Image (cartoon, rainbow, N blue to C red):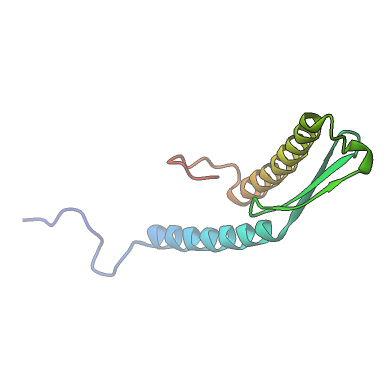
Length: 117
């Protein structure tokens, strides 16, 4: 009876072995890219520069700077909105940069399954 499936006696066929090596190399590159992304900082402003927010590539808020003229005790809601707007813009910038880095690494391949590339 002939044996079905599996790999020949010598291990993985050449093409499969090359594919595994490429996948491992891509995984290392993705890990390096992710580490680089986490070390970056992104800054966004709102209200004509009255509010500045800086975030890291780890999605952490690093700092919030407020101009004195934007601090109005009678209009806290506007200040809150400006902080939210600047924070969201900084995070959007970080996500866009991350997506571009991953796309460059994977050549735009969408592997599905919830993978970020």
